[in-house]
Image (cartoon, rainbow over the protein chains, first blue to last red):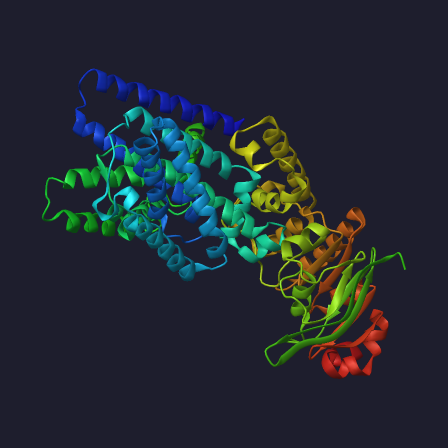
Length: 312
Length: 258
């Protein structure tokens, strides 16, 4: 009951947000600049939440997420530009190929632990990027021209689906299996959790949604270039997850929204932009060392509110 | 011999040049409660780790219900029906007490990954069944009142109990307890003895336990194996072990002679 209440609550909230924003766009209150920030925000939420399932839930420190975003971006761009497929098919294709890439990368690398895994995933992401850099078919270093097809609706529906699937996964026996790996891998194994299987599952799901985010990203600008998906992009995504609080889905989403806004605002100060951005990160980590939300979810805040209310 | 549950034959393990455990021949019949004792560093926990697949024996073999355990991973051993607790408590600290038990209950549920993602009816019935069963286990251990508490917030004795509850939830035939009474006061140890006797009867378990508390071991075990320097030096009833000069020399000392 409790979980389905949260589910319907989330869906209603999503519909309300969509209706309000769509109304503002139709009413001409949001120009293209703001729409673009909104789409960017949606993409970042998808990336953050899809990395959250790998790092926050399963506890596997992967810093190669931009690689899977690149796979989604390039595959979907090939699908629309070269093969003439509709955007929705291209997004799904990008996501599926990205998930396959995640599976292929995950099976050998997820045997590693901690720092070693981080370096291996970083390496794989760079390999993926360099492959795109050297394939003339997708434009090489010059990049690939892509028509702008993404609308706010695509991006928003993508976010809703990403959050729903990952929340559903987490609140099930499969998600608990993944969390138990994060908590204590030896004990999880001894309790009958096939740790390799669940690590690979989490990694594959994460890659799938990174692929969707990449596909939507690719069709939001007029060009995609391999340099966009370098390790700095991976770190950006990592920052959302850590800043939001490791293990908190709503935290990583909130951090993605917050940092997108900060970075959009700072675009007005190009010289000092990165300095201020870094200072913001340092301040947040000093005052909230476990991230904005810790391991709590936003739904648990409401529960505490109710408890307090009944006492009064 | 159909009563035999698990048997090791010349089981041993070598770490580099060090023979940690060698030539261990043990057997457990169904329903037995057996103690494994020995001085620190004798290889007791290493033996447990081999029985549960954490370490692979480099010599000899383990047969559980006629099946070879060699080469199986811990989760596969767990599925066959061997569950354990750990010497240094290994709970899932940031999960609730209930979720700790649910994790172990994992393999008894059947609902698939896709049914959970798409919230199909089988997901809800499966999760409801897990919840019900897990609460039953917590009730046996008197932990159901703490079910929403984080495992890390439980007092020490309760954490030990929760570990046993979690091990039981994996539906084992053989339960391996690694120093269940470590750090407990006499009253808690006494309660634990009664609890072990109770779950053994209730679930028809076979139990192998490592313990340093001689009062507990002598009190409830039917047979005792004694390890020293990685080798079995004696086995027999508590009475026999008590009077075995080799054991007294290696380990028990005056405590039991008096």
